[in-house]
Image (cartoon, rainbow over all chains, first blue to last red; front, side, top):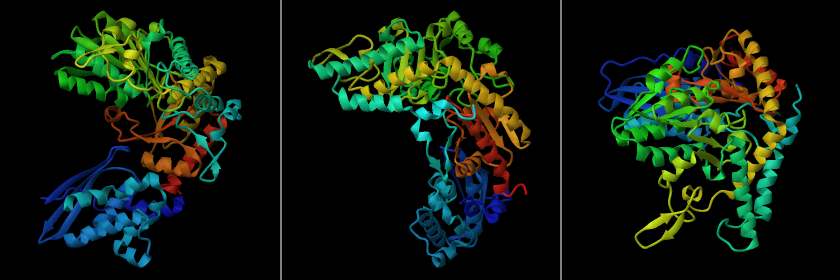
Length: 139
Length: 410
């Protein structure tokens, strides 16, 4: 079970998150927080012509929340807002266990690696923090 | 003590967690319940249930007797003079809110000071923040020495002529360190302030004598000392309670109700509005019996033995950072708070869970303390009288795997 969660890929994203830094002149800055465990992130997006041109995050949290955020940002860059919303919904459905079709989940790229969190109720909030924060920003 | 005999009284611990025999080390959050407590709750609902204080029939009188004898037992358990000083609540949080809203709201004015310690659990902090805000009072904090104990000089600095309430935790739920409450009480009383003690982590672990502590109010939860969830206690000095207005109002707490006015019942009923948790009180009574049958000498010996065994083992692991573990054991209950270097506590807890070991990860409802320590979150292993040396070995064994699972060590 643990090996399905703490994969090399997730360890990599959480240890050296490529996107953990501030953006210059972000269009949106949104804070997300899990009061029960203390994880907090700040998501920064630069949007132009309905497209996410750049994104980054800062904050602290467990490996799952940090990796999930980093992988989400990988995915977001260059996407339209509409597409980003679709992907956030797809990710959240995957974590709820509503979507488990591998082909459908391919759209999530690296983030599909968090699929098994659906079987770990205690860690669902960690995996979804960034995606809920994204949804709040875009809505 | 690799096989602790008391564990047999706790059938829930005879189960697997993730395919391994469960090691339950989250007693700071809630303890398990012995068979005798579960039987007492079943016995109440199976044989004595009726609404106490109301019915003129035998079953109601039985229920009243269960409830009131539990109150007498609690009074004795914490050294209260009079059973009317024992108010049943649902937990320590409700007890502390009762003090804040009934005593605090009516005795605090703009410019007055409320003094807390930085160790406080949110339950003894947020209510006082609310009162301070509503009344324009000043909230001050007593800080710590390097070893996590209260800085006693700071007590003298922070408690002044303007201080009306001092609220202090008896045993920190993060460090397990036992505060010298008497010292705080003496200072508080010397300026005419009242002392509110959060005993959530001390009741059931060490003998309590509210008078020797100098506590004007003392709050604790049943569920952290073998009793069921949903029953808690507030002790208050009779003269204080008598002058306080009710917290909640409604049935059973009245004397005469007119269309426009109401007079209130005597203590303790004045503070117990509506039908109370009588089954919970029966469980609490059985929990006290169990704790007393083991004896505080014995339970304290077990906690100390586990701490004394665990700490050197943890110190052998170069990646473990300990908090509040520097002072002597005689000042500490069975709580060890730590971090695994470069691993978030939540990940540590998940990895230990897979090994069948239950610990707590997070801020333990003490965010200001964690900010003061400069850490986001910590892991906490907390022992109780049914834990064994084997449990500690399983914890250590699990911790040895953490960094490997996280791909940090080979």
